[in-house]
Length: 510
Figure 1 (tube, rainbow, N blue to C red):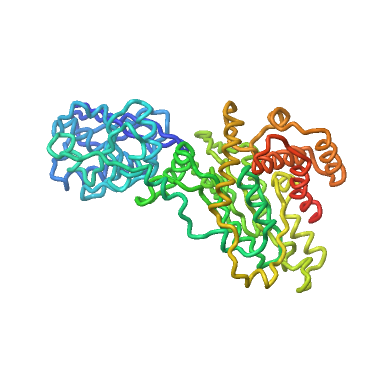
Figure 2 (cartoon, rainbow, N blue to C red; figure 1 turned 90 degrees about the vertical axis):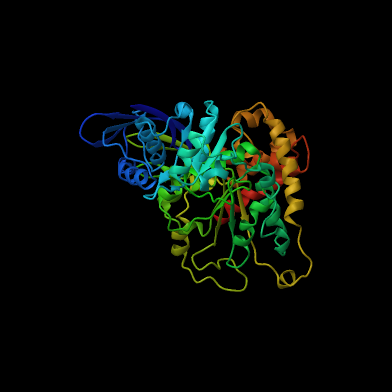
C-alpha cells in the first residue's frame, strides 16, 4: 500500500529532484500532504480526486498520506498533480509498475484528467539527466522544451489515463525529439538590420565595439536621432550563442514560464526593454518565492533602458551590484537564491527634460535647475559602471534620403564573432570570464600590457578628464576590444585614444 515516484522542483533557476511517496492506510477517508507544501500543492487533493474518477479509475476510500521529500525544501506549483495521482493508483494496485520509482513525472491535472503544462521543465530535465534518470513524463506542451536535453527519454502525455496506459505497457508513446541543430540554423534570422540605419557611422562603430567586448553603453542625444532604432538592432550583431549559453538562458525563461512550444530553446541572445515604471523587484527579481527579474531575463543578452532618467532612482541603483558581479542574490527568510545576470546594459537618454539642449535648430526650454534635477537621477557610481558614453547627433537630411544602404548586420557580426573567438582563446583557462568586459584588475595587468607611449597617453587622459580608477580599467578593457577587432595582439596608442573618446563624452555631459 506504498508507492514512490520522482518529480521535480525549481530552486532559483536550477532543478531539484523530489521524491513523491504515497501511503494508503486503513481508517476514515483523508487526504493529507506533508513536506512543506504550499497552497497550490495542498489544493492538489481536489484536482487529483476528480481527475482519477473522471479518468475511469476508482479513487481509494482510504487514509492517503503524500510525502514530498526532501521535506526541508518548500514545494510550490501544480506540477505534483500527475505524480501524486499515479502514485495513488500504484499504491491501490490499479497501476502495477515496478519501475515507477525510477521514473520522473511532472504535470498539472484538470478535473477531466487532462494534463496541463507547467513551468521549469527544462531545469528539471537537466537535473534528472545529471542524476541518471532515464524516463521523464511531461505534459505534451512541454515536451519539445524537455527534449532539448540529450540522454533521457521524454514521454509527452496529454491525460492521466494516457500516462497510466503507457506505464502499464498498453500504449506505446515514442520519445519526443527536438532538432537542436535546426533551431541553431535559424539563429541569424532577424526582422531588422543595421543596413536600414542611415549615417551615424561613429555610433555604429561604438555599438560594434560594445558587442565585441560585452561593454555597457549609454547613448545620449536629442529626440529623433535614432538611439532606440540602433539599440534595438544591437542583437543582430551580437556574437552567436553556444549551446551552454543557450541552455543557461533557456533555463531562466523556462522558470519564468516564457517559453513557447514553437521556441523550446533560446538560440538568439535575449533583448529586454522594460518600461520606466518598472519596480525594483521587477527589474532585479523577488517575491515571496523569488522569481527572476529583467536583469536575469537579459542574461547573455541585452538589457535596454530607454529614457534612462525617467526610471526611479532607487530602481536604477539596485543594478550596481549585478553590473559588477554578473549575478543577483535575493535573500529571504526561507531561502537565499542566486540568479544569473551577466548582461550588457544599453541605455538611451535625452540631454535635458525637453530634449533639445545643445541642438542647433530647436532651442532648449529648460531652466538650469531642471536640467540639473533631470541628470541627478543618474548617480556617479552608476554612470561609472557604464563603459562607453556616446553622443548621438541629428542625422543630416542628405544621409536620411540616401538610397545607398549601410553595412549589413551580418558583416558586422562576422567581425564581432572573430573578436569573441580571440577572447575565448585568451580566457580559456580562466573560469567565469567570457569577454573583455568581465576581466578583473589582476587579469587586466596580466593580459593587457601597455607600452610606454600607451601608458603616457592613458595617464594624461585620466589626469585631464579626472576619471576614477574604475574608469582607468574600463578604458583598458575597451582598448583591448578595439585591438581584438583589429586582430592586433598589442594595444596601441591609437586603440587607447579611441577608447578614451568613449569616456570623454561622460565628462563633457557632466
